[in-house]
Amino acid sequence: MMMNKCAGLIAKIVGLTLVGLGGLGGCAITTPSEESQFFLLSSPAIPSQTFKASDVAEKTVIVGPIHFPDYLKRGSIISQVDAHRHDIAKLDQWGGSLEDEFEIALIKNLLKISPGKPFVSSSGVLPKRQNNQIKIDIYRFGRDSDHTVALEASWVWLNSRGDIVSAGSFRETAASSAGVKAQVSGMSMLVEQFAKQLLAAAP
Image 1 (spheres, helix red, strand yellow):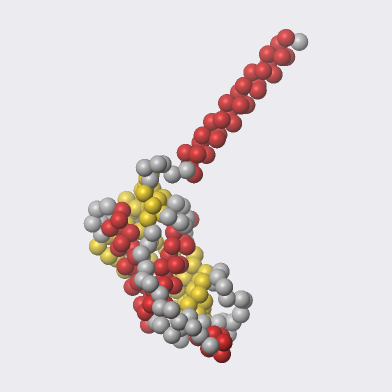
Image 2 (image 1 turned 90 degrees about the vertical axis):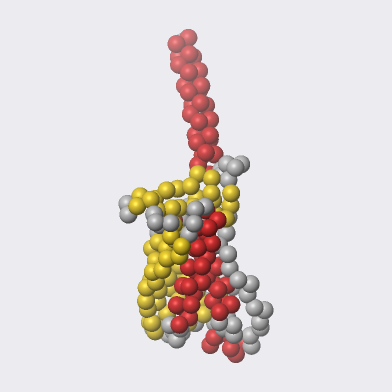
């Protein structure tokens, strides 16, 4: 009887210890350090404009969905080490998800470059309906091993009937000096260049 009680007590102690360690492990993974820095992609201010109801269906462009590879779906900022490895920053974090940051910066650049045409997120305010649409796949977005930042993507423009009007790919780099701030600045410039290519192929 005494052995059973001892065994039960040991099991409880071990269980509580494992739960505590599990909790600490979770904090280490999901909670940024107090020394962490948080970054956002820069984007231009958008024009203030109003559209008539009759123009909305004809002119509105839905941006998205935008698909990112799994390795970029994290809070930490990623840098490419070589063709087969990437580095995950321990302290440098995105202020939000990189997918959302990219979508916001892209839409704001589209609105700035092409005033007079409303661009909205595929998950945003527009109800489900047929409009011109841009669908995008991102393959690479971040610092390369040679002190440049790169954006690689493919895209398609669809008309209001869902037919493909144009399609293409984008591969550009920008110089980036040392430091995460310079990296994020270069990445923001690439989003602007990408927006210009998309608009050049608009239906």
